[in-house]
Image 1 (tube, rainbow, N blue to C red):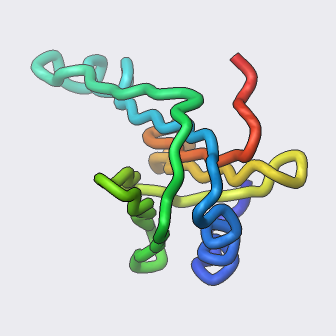
Image 2 (cartoon, rainbow, N blue to C red):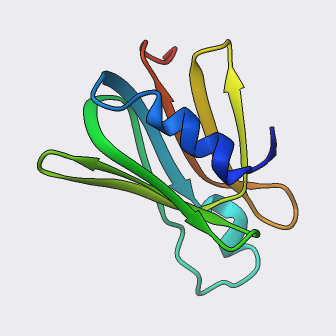
Length: 117
């Protein structure tokens, strides 16, 4: 993965507009939090191969981290804290946010074919 380039990521997001796509979205602070602070809560969310169709996509950010929003007919999907991206196998847009130690904090992935289980 490489640091996010807003224009290139926006182009990739736009390439999936109005198509049925599969989304993988996960967030976690996992075990990262509790070993630093005994009072910290471990939180996370995970969804894989949600089939959606979005009509608008937007990436915004300040050069350090980014937010991507996908506007669907009746709602939104968004991920915040993204830092890196790549195109995998020529057709999957993979975006992730890593902390200062390189640990995964958030991932948003889009593909026209289901992700492997």
